[in-house]
Length: 207
Image 1 (spheres, helix red, strand yellow):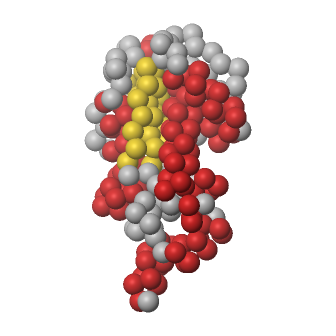
Image 2 (cartoon, helix red, strand yellow):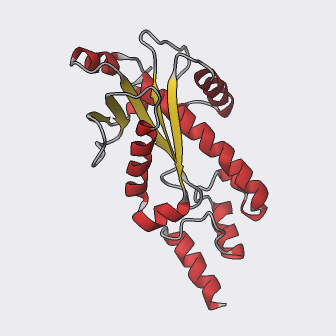
């Protein structure tokens, strides 16, 4: 289970406030990439908080409500939409989301633990932790916020674009989603820089 050992090490190294940062939705064919940053209070513990992918939807939702409703926890979240992903690519969009989420913290932090690799041009000292959402509680908390907020948004998009079944697959490239793409073509929240979407768009352009 994740803990605060990495956060405590940063504090021993002289940094006073440490944020954890994670994203959700780098791989889907549609929708934004969601990024969250979280600052947990010293001594924070939680019996179930873990990498969001290891939690059921019900548990994620419950933990999300706990985290966002706790006045002792600072958090920030951002969505980088499909159009920006197409314009600058998914890696750059993810990095930009991480910068924005970190800068959106109030109060702010002077160090960041980021799930994955270090981020170019990040506005503060930071460390990239591979599988950080399974070892750092701050990153795990960010992973839950990013995942829940993106899933909720995709359910709302499903009401606007019901033919794609976004409420079921959240934009990932499932068989059902790819079939819907071939049948209906892309909608405004699809990522045209991703090959299956570009192929569907080209097919519809020919007809």
